[in-house]
Length: 304
Image (cartoon, rainbow, N blue to C red):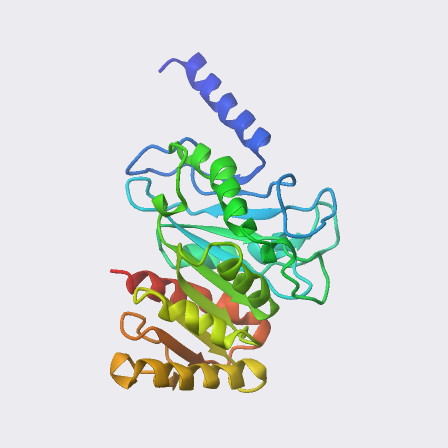
């Protein structure tokens, strides 16, 4: 390759990064060529959202790890945040503002926690209510919105960057894991029920989030023997009480021979049993960043 063609290629990559809103990218060797270098993180400020947002606010954060391989099934991890959340702070590390130029706060680094799990998946965090103490699901409660929203995400922000053809069905993509923290359970549950995602999601992980919906989540889990539900909780409050209720109902309907429906402090083996619980001393606000990597890894291993 000549110097001139090398310079042209470098310039093209810079222009592509600026035009698509890529926040970070670094080249890595891939088993199958990708259209853009990995890793990358995008924060589009246009497109469908569940709530009314400020004009410059990201509608979502989408992050692809450096180890992503296009030759393997690519999974999706959908993270639904709790009260007063903004996805830039949740996803990124360091001092981060909810909007570029805003006052900063410590980032949770959830994109990095996702990468630590080592799974062949893409991290997606939709922006829910903007900095409000509420978990309202907004448009995720509308019939079919979650599926339409996810198809938009894949079509506009994933398949073009990975050089993949446009998918006709969501199940052509890899497995989908839903992760909800705190009040994010409302949007997660709505997406499973009303958004038509329930048939394509096979793992749900709740971080101190089981404030309601015990019957609905158990019904979703038991509808397909391949599904797994894990409720992580602290030592007190509604998530703990509801997790115990969930375990009792699961034991009644499945029988103990179907799996160990006990409340453990260790990471449960999701390969056996369909309903699991885990107690933790990790503070409520730190659960996703501290525990997500090992639990995503456990969820991925349980599919093999």
